[in-house]
Length: 518
Image (cartoon, rainbow, N blue to C red; front, side, top):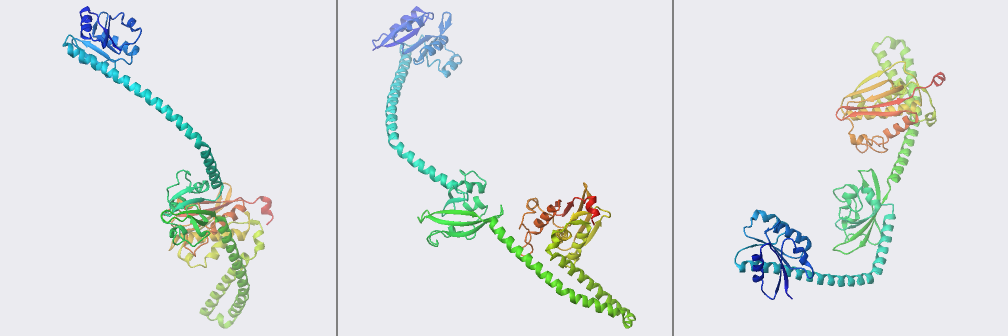
């Protein structure tokens, strides 16, 4: 089979030269002019296109550009006598021209270029043939793959169904559930665990469990996984209690040895939230303690009333004695004893009021300064308050509020004690009453360390405290908040770190009818 070569030229001498140059049975030369070369494309398309640069009415670059559209597979040769490389640089770059031949020139040189173009075309044809072969082979492989997929598809669906059922069961558990390795790295987690960690469930595998779930740098205290397989207690669950200080939660941990392989053991850990349960237990214990303290204080107060009354009686009788009247120093001493006894009697009366639950349910018009003064009096017996300066600014003529004197005094006792403790050694305790936005207010301020923004968010949470163990239960502010809320009021807090805090209790004034009932 001869290779068809299209030569586009406008010179008869050049046409004859192309014929002599390619006078070989292996070639079939088609010589055409710039106006009729496209009509010579009938039948088998040429495998190489050669065009002179200079053509009548056009140029070889335009012919080769059109040939690239009509014969994209045919290599294109530009025959030029004085080819400007800048002129052909662009067409060479975009593939309009593949080769440049110098004519007139040595016949062998032009023939070499045409043979190179032909070799390029043959290489292309070979690559296309190889591509077709590969395509057929790929189709055969795809057919085999489909047959294989058909064979395993049923089994795959069964496995997928079993996997999804297991995952749904895993995620249906409302408590955090994890599978963890001996290196504490998470292998699998359920949705509840991801929700607790506030992360996407897909990001958790690979993270360390105590960091991802509880923000700890080291394993949780008492974690059974920390001992590994060698220290595992035996069949069944190993239990521990884990706390999450970031969220104020407590979990009961039940860990199971899932895979005892020493090189890569696996454990399943189930976390049950027992925060509310523990809080209720603490509240019950605290209530029992408060009830016991109230009963004890009431009993002590009753027992103290009698000897205090005896002391007052004998002091008053002694002061009437003429002998005492003539002794100024002795008279002053007896007066001090009488004042101290009256002070003790007042403290006992306040304790008796707090120990009578029936009074806590009584609401009546109250001047807000009265429970505030009462609270200051009760707290004034403590040593710490003697180390601070007390500044009072109690407004006169304020409207009364509907309230329970004992409960309001309990609120102010808590606020005053907290203010004194916040100041440590020395400081100024400010007590103020007045009107604000149509409501009666009483404020307790200190010059202590202030409250951080982080602690401010949790200030009224039950059992939240920044005090050292044994110095507070964390119930004072939450109880106070509840009392004020039941009185129809609110508690406002203003604080600046390093400058102190002010707690303000605002209550609605009593109506005219309520005040008239006093």
